Image 1: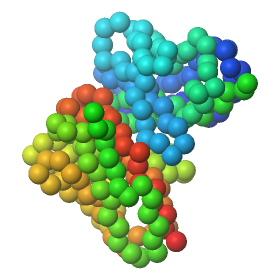
Image 2: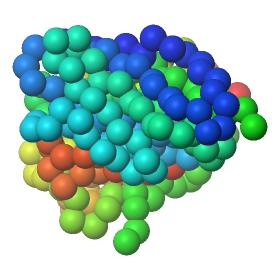
Image 3: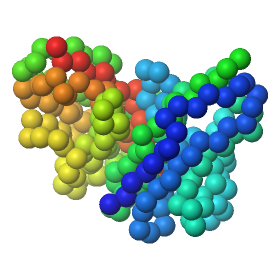
Length: 113
Length: 113
């Protein structure tokens, strides 16, 4: 069965600094991978997805992620963080049957002024 | 356009009562999913509907949980004889097809007293 690990439960960065959130997955075939963001009291908003092709994918709000098969990783990056980026971020992989998402435990991002 | 709509946004009920949670997917989305988000367990898949096919109920935690989808659109998740461990945020998502990105509602926060 597939699994997703987000090693960092909390991360604090200064506004304007760069950001990288780690995600490692376990999956037998070529994975469909996603990053979602959740603000307090809100649902999950899709930031970006990887299905195939170019391993560097661009998303909304200036985020990007790079798929590295050799490392089973799909890390999320942003060159310059804004205070409004403070939220919880979830990495997810689509299951074998193409239906359910398996999520990592999430990384809570705090942004210092 | 309109996103996934869930109601109620909050529900407080006494242990042992039955509750119904509603989800209106994005118009035209054939796939609908329910997830549960709790502090101890993170985000967990519950059930999945695709068109007229039999639902995938593999994530339902007990036989107290059931869900239906009427007319291929609105879905209701029912929890019978609620227990305190059922307290969580219940998230609904929909997508155009099984291997497409899932779009989430804001969830129903369920509290069992």
